[in-house]
Image (cartoon, rainbow, N blue to C red; front, side, top):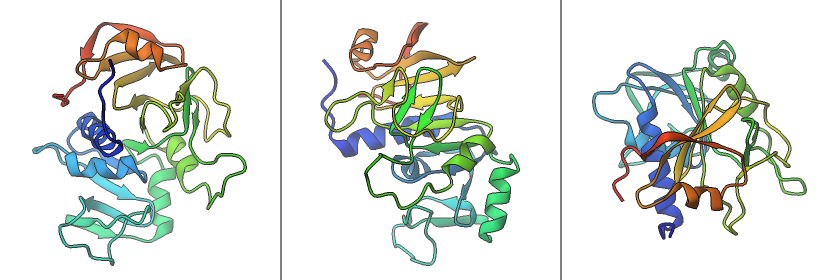
Length: 225
């Protein structure tokens, strides 16, 4: 049986596991929603330089006392770490487009078996704009997707083929959900970790995408229950 988690518990579990994906010194962009929570879980001893699209390098976690002078691209207040800086938007996108990001963490509406990503619009819905996702997924060295495993009404987000408008093709490297971690190798999706108490059969039952299971599949790092 799949764990009964609240939406908030799912989000924080995902963020906690994603935070273990970085190496000391990595320059990382965090998207809005679940990705923004990742900054709260960076392990001690690992220095990650967080960059925001709207112009911060060296961003820190959400402060105890919010300061509206310092906000991320999604409107969440952030802190500026020692040595950090606020920069102009054109320089920020120069960092992204110039290939200087070691990783970007983004949410998703759909990811398919080939590593294609759809995360910017639902046809017929209100769209404020595509944001910087299309730049990020082609500019960053690694693309990590942080998303719940299914929609709120239980439909798979990991699908055989994306049916929503694509953000980019064959760009996803890692997918982290509250139930599992997948990696892509040469366009093939591989299940590498499952949450405690979750089986490979459980994952197959709620995943439409084709995937292979690693030998062995590990218990999800950093998740104790």
